[in-house]
Length: 125
Image 1 (cartoon, helix red, strand yellow):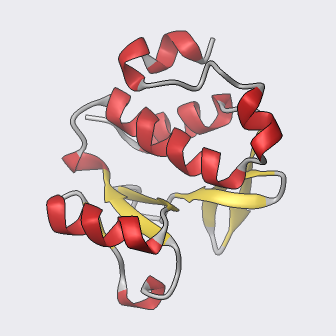
Image 2 (cartoon, helix red, strand yellow; image 1 turned 30 degrees about the horizontal axis):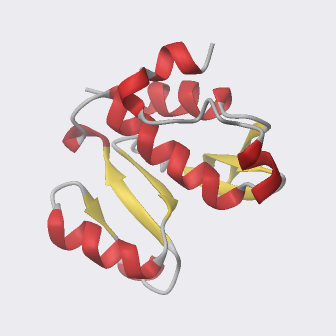
């Protein structure tokens, strides 16, 4: 089962990602744009997610995805680490959030950020 250390390890391997503490928790940012947060209990994390996609995710897998009431108006979704299939699924979710923070030009120069079937450890070395 993936854990908060896996979130940190994968996030910091994404191009130009930095870790910064905010609200007493680790956040991960690209060019100042936050794309991952890891709350204190470290059993979940939050990622960017367009609202129209978020509703579908939650409806399809409510045991995995949810939104706290105080984040309902945001474009973020929470993910329960214990509900993830493996580190490949974690990688896909983190990369998707990173892509939402990254400018288009960088996406074009980062072709190595593909599907998790390639293996998150191999792509990020």
